Image (cartoon, rainbow, N blue to C red; front, side, top):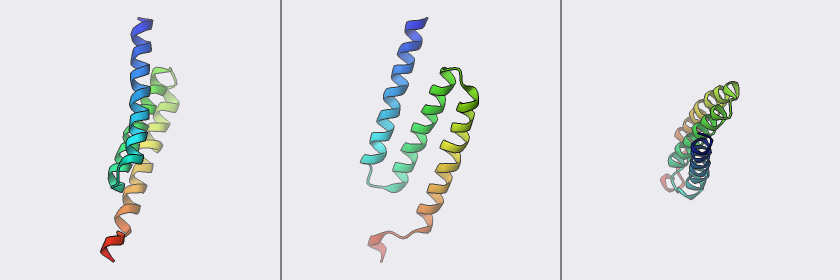
Length: 84
């Protein structure tokens, strides 16, 4: 049981790092924001697995939902350099 939980945690941590790397690697800003949102949701899942549900709810609500919404609104209100 402990080995399976450790493997799940390692997989989640690898996916968090992959999401962060993808956020930097993507050229499109919206894709980068979505990759960061996915990484944030995985971080909240990791907090839940570590038996910190209050922190997991805060991370999911603020880190994934609110921050992503603010980034998407900011991206929509700006113009691309190519459009000028």
